[in-house]
Image (cartoon, rainbow, N blue to C red; front, side, top):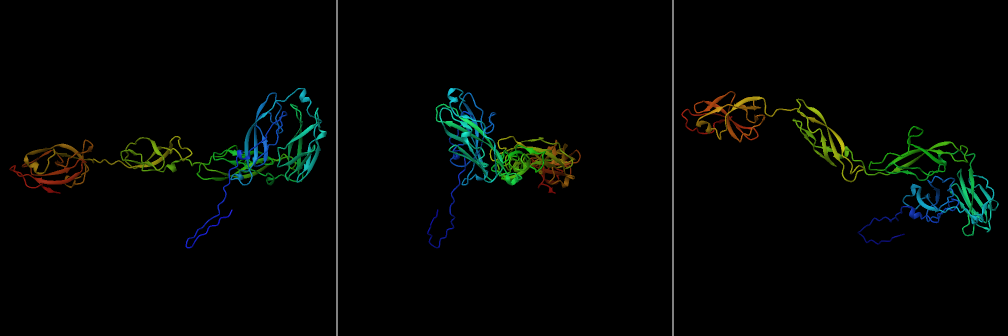
Length: 491
């Protein structure tokens, strides 16, 4: 396809020829048709819209030598058709696709009408042909005998089309080899044009011989296979029988059936090692050869971990109270322990925060909270009330109020102040808690006393509701009880 676009200066376009998107090859695209099983349990080679049949297998217990046993009643058979993925599809590198099919095998008819159909005559001998174009021809009329009616059709089932080709023309079967060695069984069936007559089937063992060739990994011809995101391994197709899987070459102690799930958030390359049983036809037939294959394991959602949660703001106070803080991703559901005792020296504490993953976006989304352990320093406890004991009077709204009589200084307090006249900015506590001073004035002394008219010099503190000493004042009331001027001397 070509596209012509005229562009007038001064405009410029940078264009790339569009590419046709490649579709994904699926079993529906392969469109497997005319897959049947005859009375003898013989499978025919189906027709495909795309791809080539690589093999037909079944997990049924009586499936052997590429065919089923006969049955007395019609029976559904579970079959897997392995189809090669042709070029032009986005998943061509997968090599093959396994397509499950269910096909009914008819009952084997044992009656007089069946005896009128073709029968076998002796057995077709095993065939050995050379690799790279060796061939053999077989006159099928020598191995099948007609019934009442003449044989009208021969059907050939070839389970290994990559190993040999097999075709029938005018009763002559021609078998030809490809460029690989190995062995397989051909199934040849003869039938006539009668109604409800039986078919006759012969099995032919075919070996493609490469006696001077030692099977090596280059002959394995791996096709497809892979590792799913969850670690499920699909063995590749090979000319040899694919057996044990391991992750390290020659390490017989690490046989695996699956790989670790890829929750890293990006695809990764994985190398696996397979034990291959060398097929017939090679000089080392029956031996085990280890061959490796590289697979690209796709990524799923990453795992939600403590590193992803990225906790911050967790703290422990001097009193041992825990500040839960926040998680950048996810939410903190709980923590333990709930608190600690105070300490006299700085101490590192271990706290477990249980973080719930987000609802989506992670492999463990929707799962249980994950434990995230944090090591948090707890500072040494310092008593905010101090250890210095003083006595104070009742509250007065101003220093002038103290000169209206005598006031007893006898209420016990503690303070961080080490001297009553240099106490500004220090803290006052009563009964172990910061004193609610109301921003009033309180006469203070180190021992019980009285202050006011005629008592001489005394000190008072202005204390707020946080127990903070806002001002320190020194005052002397007149002896005659008259009201003084001013507020006293602020220190």
